[in-house]
Length: 103
Image (cartoon, rainbow, N blue to C red):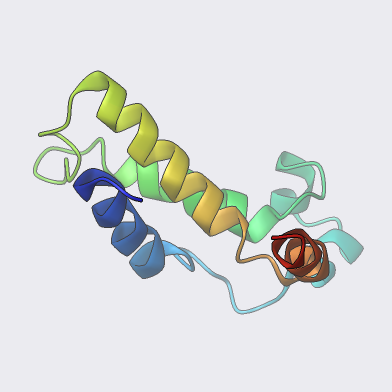
């Protein structure tokens, strides 16, 4: 199943999935041509922003939560965080449910 660093990455993603959330939804950001929608080409702007803020924060001194990981483990943990946070976009919900039902 999951390695310990992947479990930890899931916990980090769960805590940070709404990091920087402005209190509006993606549809509003896209409809109003908000800078986040423009930056992320209308694709999950809130989730992309949360991922970006998370990894910017983790680069700050004293905040290196993944600092003890090897390069390969860091790459895996980063992927887990990004995939997990991006999957919180409700616009993708039904496609994800369909994928899960195939198993």
